[in-house]
Image (tube, rainbow, N blue to C red):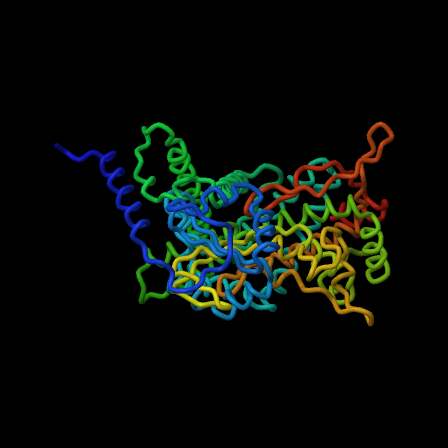
Length: 507
């Protein structure tokens, strides 16, 4: 009798379960955590929504390092910055791998992008490409003109359609990333490539969520045929893979066509294509460049920037006193006859603190991206098994009462040292990742957000909506994605004066 695909899937499941039963006991004391069930482990303890809340509870109960398992897979949760730095930064040679994510990585194809590339030569080569494009202060300074020009355009768009501020933020972030990466200037308003990037990143946010797709816990399910009952997730993976491939290939092809015509604008991709090493396989280099470029949005630069700027508008709606204080500083340092520029950053200390507080208060990536241990390790007396998935509770860290006073309140002053107290911990210590997997676009995101914060506060008064004579104070509610965005909220956005409008409408 011929062996069917279903037989093969059942055989794979049986072998996988046998491996769980026969796996060796740990050779050391595991970190504390919830009590596991036989064979199943903590599969019912691992949260599927708002994981950071559950992990914060574990931190209070078990300490900065906690442990759980699910169907033989080990999970280590880190709940404070010091522990994360000691493990992921100082032992980066052990903890710089990524776990194999069956849904997002293997089936959809995100394994080819920098965030999910396994530790090795390809990772090092890709990071080298990106560092060469935006890894130094002088390189970011060379982009300041673009950031300022795109932010001025953003202000004009918001002035014309303030009710669409979230849409304007996405359009501007997409424009910046596409110009820097591909030399592609999106069309005003609707642009097919920007739309494609947004769709791809929305799909990414869905499939990368931990513990949502059973195939991530039971890998043999990847072989389930499309027609099998309940296999709708596999059809989704196939469709999402096509979208991702198109998003990576289309702008790359655009650059090649422009280079052939001699009309290509300077960009990350055009520069890398011009510098290709003749000693290496051209197709392999093109593939690496293609996915390195895709990391500019797939590496969270796009979503992080969007979330941070939208968080500014939310925070200013809730905390009008912060807005007034920042505007007073801008008026004193810059005046009213021009917009703030990067040359003013060193003098705008409170505005700079607002940027830092946006990164902290919003906690844009609640769990960051998972790391994996390459080998067995003993850390702070606990045994960390090889292959453990290391989860960093970034949102919990950024709202830790032991580190930040009154952590749920938006208080930029916390980052300005006084004679009475030192400045609190810079959120950039953890909000962009750790060790060798830290986001290579962190300086790019920081500069883009600073321009948006300083220039938006110079031009706009962001206020609370009044409905039936009742002032609406929105709640600080965020979505439950890997890059978390504020949920839609009511606010008003008006120019501070006619002279402020003139600063952006005169161009």
